[in-house]
Amino acid sequence: MKILNIEERVHRIEERNARVEMDKKWEGSLARKALIALFTYTAIGLYFQYILQVNPWINTIVPTIGFLLSTLTLPFFKRMWVKMQEK
Image 1 (cartoon, rainbow, N blue to C red):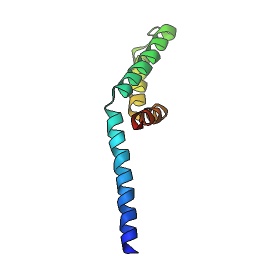
Image 2 (image 1 turned 90 degrees about the vertical axis):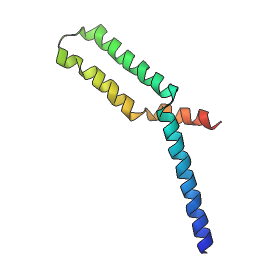
Image 3 (image 1 turned 180 degrees about the vertical axis):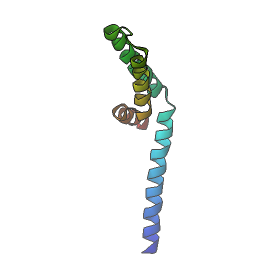
Image 4 (image 1 turned 60 degrees about the vertical axis):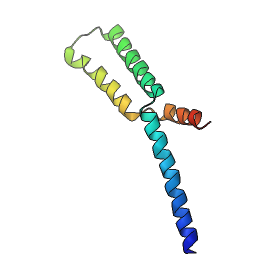
C-alpha cells in the first residue's frame, strides 16, 4: 500500500511540474507579449479618441490599467495558448 501512495504522490508532482513549466513558457511567450501590446494599444487609442487628454492625472490611469491587464496574463487566452502548445 505504501508503494501505491508514493507512486500517486510522484504522479501528482509530475503533473504539477508540467503545469509550472507551461506557465513559465507562457510568461515568456511572444503570444502573451503581443496580446498585452494589442490590448494596451487599443485601450489607449480609444481613451485618447474620446477623452483627448483632459487631465494628466486621468491620463495615467490608462497605462496603469494596461499594466494590470499584463500582470493578470489574460487567463482565457492563456488556456487557448496552452492547448495549442500541447498539440
